[in-house]
Length: 192
Length: 87
Image (cartoon, rainbow over the protein chains, first blue to last red):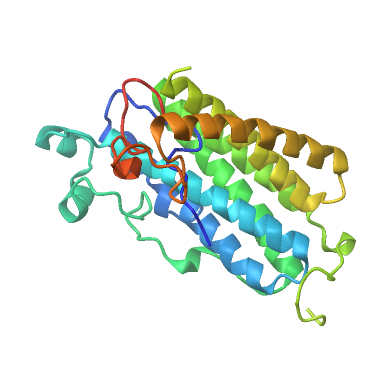
């Protein structure tokens, strides 16, 4: 189970609201390669993992992804503070605003709501680990793209942190080769 | 140390301990890493103890309650813009 630490993993303090930036950053909340998907993917995969070390790794990475989801949501919330109708229209934020006002909804920049179709849980340790390696790179690329499009240093700073974490997670999954583990730690099906 | 500075220090420890934990997930036999994590944990406990004595709960299950108020609910919450830049 989970407990909540009343903090962000890394600070988000954005002086200047900007709904244009919020429109694209929101993809790292509810988009195909966003933090919500990452967390749900790893939380779901861990149940069919045959090795204790992998259950631990998936649990711990998934928990950190929830913290990242929170950071992305904080960014969206701070970027959509105190908007005037003119700012909303000028940013093209009106199509989101009409349905969600200044609420933070799990959706992609394209307007597609989050869906479990974004994640893979194949129940095979090799398959799932490869999915995870790819997922971290896709997330990293998404942060690359956000950094290409955003120039505000208050916004870039947490984005750069989140991008770095994707790379670290990729390395951790890379180290998780099944051949070196034993299955004495868990009650897994030995035929898995 | 004021509240902000103390929180920042604890957050740094949180991060280091988390990083060690994730590394140890795939290297559980690495006793050097384990010992380093445990020594960081000890230093962190002292800071969290001081924080909770002075400011109230750091985590929702904390046993420390300061005064007659459940200050856990108090603003600011972490996602809110804070000019002080203290999280």
